[in-house]
Length: 326
Image (cartoon, rainbow, N blue to C red; front, side, top):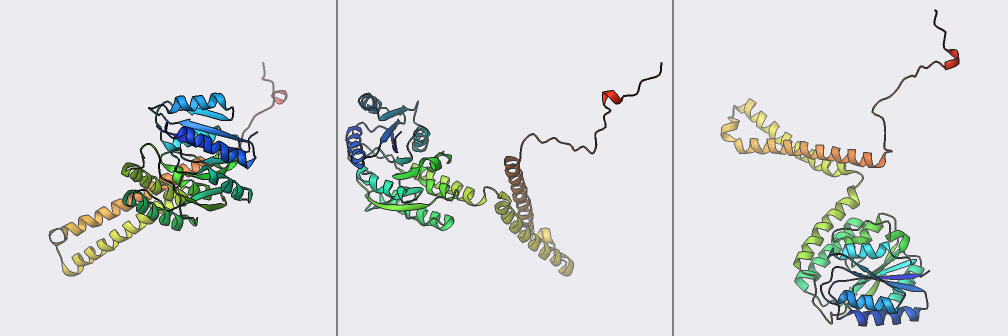
């Protein structure tokens, strides 16, 4: 049984595969522990899969997973994690920006008792406006909301204990927010500083579109982290505040009408409409929160509960049944 599994998703990386494989093999063999590689072809349109297939035929420690189309990095990682058999699982990109020589440092931290080891990228060379600044803002926000005090959530170079990573559902662009997800399970998390290398070959796919998609996943993760089992606390708070504000405005308008004879619909029609909108919006927020609470309760309670209760059941045993007269 391998002790270490390295999962690498590839998308049109034919120019990087051979060098990455050689460097990975050298690093893991020097470590002296049994290992396996799981290479996932995420719907590549170039010669990525034939190269991976060739490597798998000459090295039994290599497993190649070919997806039918491009499902995205998160789905590709999930496919690799599902097939991992090592005690420790290392995830990294296939563009040579992650140095395989750093893997022993990740494994050492796992053996120290940590559950997740994240890379902390130093001297990044990617776009300052589309990558570094949004990433910095997201990292500060995530650390503040979650209490997980690390500097780089989104780095793809990470190591996990397999029993932990198999419990985490992955979808969307959530591979960058795994530390936040595992924090809910009480995982011990640490960082290892690494140098962020430059892409030697091929074209980066980390553009503004992916940044926007990750931003929406960030919102979802922050909500789930704090309110997944108590949605009424979120929706109810906003609903109560909205109803309270509408009630205050309505009370003021009512006093204006009674005390001063003000024609509300003539002089304060927009304010009256705004008051009604606040009350209706608040009611809708409360209703959504209650529906969410019902879903949470349905999820956590045992199924197949009958829609009735019985006070008593009367039944006469067959031996005690009286005989009917002729």
